[in-house]
Amino acid sequence: MKSSSTKISRELSRAADILNKDGVVGIPTETVYGLAASIFSKEGISKIFKVKERPSFDPLIVHISNLHQKEDIVREWPALAEILAKNFWPGPLTMVLKKNTKLNSMITSGLDTVGIRMPKHSVALELIDQVGPLAAPSANKFGKTSPTSAEHVKSEFKEEVFVLNGGTCEVGLESTVIAIEDTKILILRPGMISEKMLRDATPHARISYAESSASPGHLKHHYQPKIPLYIFEGEVSAETISSQIQNQNWKELELDTSPAIAARQLYESMRKLSNKKLDALIVLKKPNHSSADWLPIWDRLTRASSKTY
Ligand code: AMP
Ligand code: MG
Picture 1 (tube, rainbow, N blue to C red):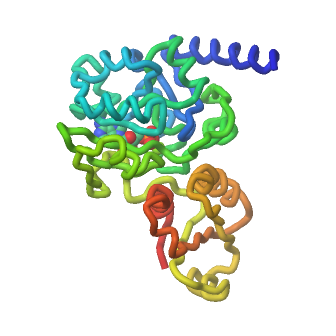
Picture 2 (picture 1 turned 60 degrees about the horizontal axis):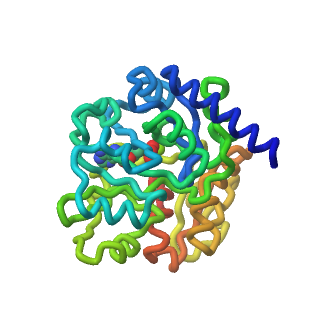
């Protein structure tokens, strides 16, 4: 145990050093791995966009490790934000709030708002304690599958990026993103903090879903594996699938029956299968997949897919 904790603290110091010198680092969180830079480093922030090949219109999420840090980031802290932070932070909930005018506008893609959250991962929290708030999108090339292990990040960026290894991500899907205005909560991106969980924590708030394109960067095509992914609804035979996609060299991406486990395994399975010598992946949408628990998983699968049959 001692040697592994020494290794982590050595890696943490190396990561802190890189971040303090305007660099970027791959960091573990409970959702997916992030590509992080200090919010105070202009150079670091622009490196994130460059390394990721991310368009400048897609804003980054700011990660904090304690509530005092929000002062440099937001200019308003509504009562609802306080309640939600008490209930869900640290955890996979990003709140979009009015930005502090001093915050680098590259982080927010020029918007007047900023996405902020506190990740539930001891290594990330320790690093943020050491170097201050970090801006971090998912650590993958723009539009591609998000990484849920240090190995995924390394294979994506090779030697270009130092990766702090914090094991496999427990949640495995990106955070729920919400916008807060007075007593209204608008869900911009569904995630494992569900509408019901938000409702239970804030019974007086009005909660609704945004149009699917309302969140910048949450595009129609996203999270795409290396080979095409097709969704099939209803009962289908292997023959039907082969004839519909005009190819026999496909494999099924199987989903666990528990949504929490399916979410945790989703990106790992997508990556594993698309590294095999296959031409296509297919995923079967079953009747029970229409329930609220499955919403974030099918949100990602639909965006990752090329077609639904
Ligand atoms: P990623 O961490 O790669 O999932 O990307 C962060 C995502 O958070 C963006 O693509 C947006 O969908 C969302 N986001 C971050 N900041 C804002 C904001 N100010 N307004 C709306 N959505 C945001
Ligand atoms: Mg992303």
